[in-house]
Amino acid sequence: MYPALRRADEQEYEPIRKRNNNDMKDFKNKVVVVTGASSGIGEALAREFAAQGARVVLGARSVQKLQLIAGDIRSKGGQAAYCAVDVTRPEECRELIATAVREFGGVDVLLCNAGISMRALFDDVDLEVLHRLMDVNFWGTVYCCKYALPYLQASHGSIVGVSSVAGLHGLPGRTGYSASKYAMTGFLETLRIENLKKGLHVMIACPGFTASNVRFSALTADGSQQGETPRDESKMMTAEQVARIIARGVRRRKRLCLMEAEGRATHLVKKFAPAFLDRMFYMVMAREPDSPLK
Image 1 (tube, rainbow, N blue to C red):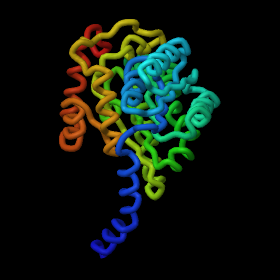
Image 2 (cartoon, one colour; image 1 turned 90 degrees about the horizontal axis):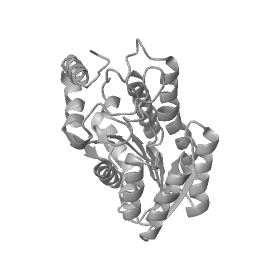
Image 3 (tube, helix red, strand yellow; image 1 turned 180 degrees about the horizontal axis):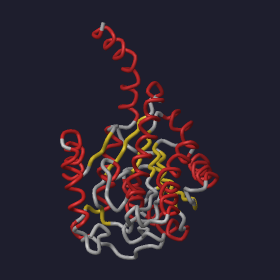
């Protein structure tokens, strides 16, 4: 019984698998949409894909920053368009995708990168902070996927959710952040299953701590930005390194893209010793300067 089912399954999905591999040998003239593209990982992703020949569409709230980045990409021979977008607003997400279709004719890769973080214990945090994180990190992904999906199905393209180690295991002091990344992962994994026969590739990318502005703008218990990072940014992965790894993962059509030893270790240890991992995460986060766990 089981061998027969396995052969039938292989025969059914083999044409899709071959087509997917052929479709993403490289990114030349592929249309790549990036949210949160005005700084950090998002900017690095836009520059990396453009350098590999993609036509990139940048989305973020700051039009001035997008203009500068898009202009720099064009000055180096790349193709770039941009659209001001607040991903918490579905109509603006719709316009971002419409910009890609209008300028370049479709969408081949959607990089859902826009996100914010937080740093406060759940005991102390204003619930509006958690709502804000879910609106940006989760609903922003949902809105962009909703409007891009028909084009991605037509191109047998890729959706990438830029998650975090906090999306693999709960991160103390970041309840809303972990919750939003878990929600995004659950949504994208389900979307992958729904589209098994449509050639859609979905990848969850989980960078470790990355040198970017996300910790400077992280929300505190009352919703204000903390304004400084509690960690040594010089010892972290750069946004450019993360972008190169994500691009390679899209090209290989990976399901899960883990980076650095901490991400791979978290994924492995969670399977066999989750209680030990709880203690390790608590200990590491408690050592941060001014940690709310102290």
